[in-house]
Structures are given as structure tokens and as C-alpha cells.
Length: 315
Image (cartoon, rainbow, N blue to C red; front, side, top):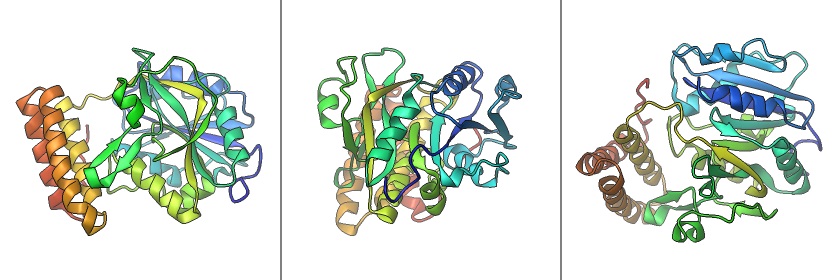
């Protein structure tokens, strides 16, 4: 990576935790077992009430930075900028590995991602394939696609949408271009993340990874990559207690606001398609009529907010 970090640069893992008593320790254990060295882990605790942050306090190479309340995904991760840091460890000069608190990794995951980043000239982020922990034959993220014209942003490409998001269960080793890097698990040059200001806090939950990827690509004229040789497993929403209708409302609101920031030619068809698809999907999968109402509320909130942030409630 000629414009990025030095080869074999150190890695800081940032794990945003909120009530992750069932999953946090497993994720930290996997990160501590990584083959990269030197390697430090920062757990940003987003106002947990279950004492999960105490389960990893005092571990070697682990720091815990506590926030007074749940600030949402974007602001929670951006608390990295306020962290005093580990003496002698300059995360801006190395790699930054952002992870959810409910992801499992093979021991060489970060090393393979870092090597892929080192081998490219234009990488602004490098991500693993991510599968559901259950069922493990179904992908959760494969590089995704973003089509503002249709109000569409998905963790899947067309191939995996059509075949039910299934994959063969084996990584093929390819490094492929991605529409965006999922904030669930991504390796980013620390300098890049710092320069663009991290995640856009106007999107507290959902779409913030679209915006970060877009900002990184524009700032550094680069690409987001997915390394299919690395497969992580995501225990989806393991720590979240937001009701499914509330999450769907927030998701639709974020998408609507994101589309409102697109060009005028993409805005109208994007918003119309979003209203149609989100209402249809909400009715089909999120408690029928309550799911449809949540989609409509979210759509209206996103359109009405204009350039103002999506409101965030402490979950």
C-alpha cells in the first residue's frame, strides 16, 4: 500500500461493546490469539449495564475505555479520538481493526487482511467475508452493493441474494472490490480513519459504514476490498435489545436520509423505491402491519430530518 501505512505496521483493534456479556469474551479471546504482533485491543464500552466490560479488564494488551451512556454505533466508535492511548502505541501510524463485540475470527484473520492491504496500491479498507454463526452456510456480508437509484444498500451482491445468501462453506482466496466496508469487521489505515473524522455521527446506527467507505474512497482515490480467504462468523444482534420494529424504523430513516444527500436525479426514484421495498419487507418479515408502519415512520423521519442527524435513543 504505497499511500497507506508501512508494511507489517502494528494493529489496534477497536471493539465497541454494549451489554455483550454473552459474546465479548469470545471476541476478545479470538483477537488476543491473532498472529499479528505487536497488537493492542481497545474495548470501548458504550454504557453497558450488564458488567460485560469488567470481564476483560486487566487483561494483557487490552484497554477498556468506558462511556457514560450508549452513544450509538458511530459516536461510540469515534470515542477512539478521545482515548488517551497506550504509551508508545501510535494507532494513527498503523492499522485500525474495527470489530463488533459478537464476531468470531480465525487466528490469522488480521494478518491475512493486513497482508492483502499491504499488497495493494489503492486499498482504503480491507474486510473479511462474514457468515452468520447460525446457520454457518449463509453469508451475512460479501462486499454488498449500494444502488442509490433504487434506494438499495445491501450486505449481499446479486449472486448471493438470488441463491439465498448461501455459499459453499469454503473461502476461495480471492480479493475482490466491494461497494462498501461493513462496520462490523474492517481493517482501515489509522491515518485514513483519523483524516476523514471516523464515522459520520449524523447516522448513529446503520448507513454510517456506507458513508465512511465513500469518504475514504473520495479522500484517497482508493477502493474497499473483501478478502474471501478470511471468513468471520457474526452472532447477529446478540447484544441488542432494541425491538425489531424500532431497529427497522431506524434503518429506514438512515437510508432515507442518505438518499436525500444524493444527486437530485437519484433522490426521487431512490426515495420512492425505498418506501416501497422497506414497507413490503417490513410487512413480510417484521410483525406484518407494525413492520410496515415502522418503515413508513422511518422513511418520513429520514426525509423530514434533511441535513440534521437521525435522532438516537439510548437503547
